[in-house]
Length: 325
Image (cartoon, rainbow, N blue to C red; front, side, top):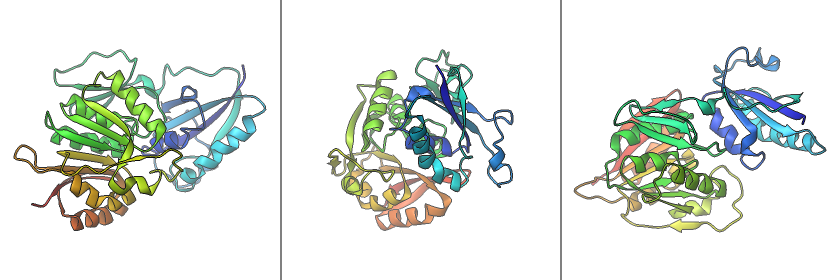
């Protein structure tokens, strides 16, 4: 059966944006991600354009039929903002007779984060190297949070340092479920919230795949006023989304979402965190670049937080804040 192959190179941080934007466009089995090499493509149209070093090449496969042209145009339009901002190359198309497998793709490799985390696909064969290693198994998904985006990496590094067993924690904008699973495997009890149906399903799959159903509750919803702000990626929310308005409930909140959401939810974060002798209350925020960090910090400071930690990777930033007593 002939297929249309679409290919593009991406930066380190763009990989999850591509996956998320395509979530309702293609079947997740029709995407293949490999580490970039000069042999993959340099894309001719982009050779004279200043761009970051490409780190991944994405291949998308569509059946060659009467709907192909429409579907290709939709994908090109969806991803064009990423190309305009220098995060991807232009999409190249070709017709191939067979769709390749992912035997040599990104999904088959081991991805280490921090001192303890190892991200694997759900069916990967792997033997832990140390007794305290924490494996995070994820199915192929188009949701944000593959473990490859700098914001996810920074979040995991902070969680590795601050999670204490028996903590009651909130994962706001759970996406693929990677942070919820990580916290559960470190001993926390987790409420995972996302206002996107596909993300909720992905989180539920990740929870089942990693055997942490007893520690993670997954709900379609948001915190406080977050439900009134629409989809975190700017899309429409068709279904009603519940709002969690718990007060002084969580020992730790992690939110890997856009800067504007952190700013809007600053007071909600403050109300939802509790202070106890065992846990001082901690907020971990990620999902924004250095150009937004001052605005995020100012909003959180105004809401009664102070910075206790900060991590950086390329231009991406993650904060740890505590409420001021």
